[in-house]
Image (cartoon, rainbow, N blue to C red; front, side):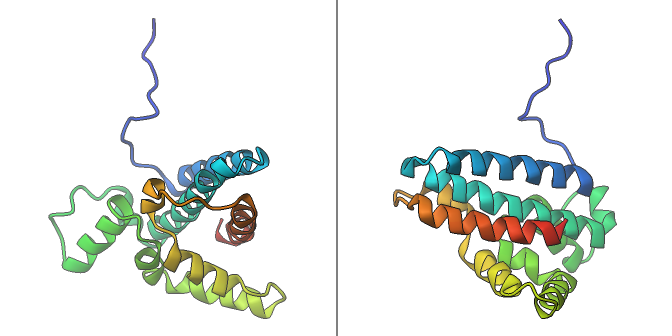
Length: 160
């Protein structure tokens, strides 16, 4: 038998690969949503946030291409170590977005061109979503998940 492929293998991905992962997780989130089962709403929202995380990290890698080959967080100037940690250790969307002012500016320009509330959606989701949602004992409703995924879907189109 050949070598088994493990989805658990650690690998550094190129921005295009991360975008592919984002598309797949968005599909997973929508699948959970389509189930109509309120017990799947938290999972749908969690995956939706991961979509945004992937897309923001892809942008971070594009704007700082050295991160794709950066060895360890222990070397380099403090700001470079901070960017490395955001890319490879953090799930804090607000902190990642703070390093991407051109993304915020682009979304604001899109708002002016007839796509209302993009910047507000981006900033609100980045401020609220946390990876700790995976541990939450509280239950979201599927209507809330639908609204959240709609916002993620809209943002996804502009963050590619």
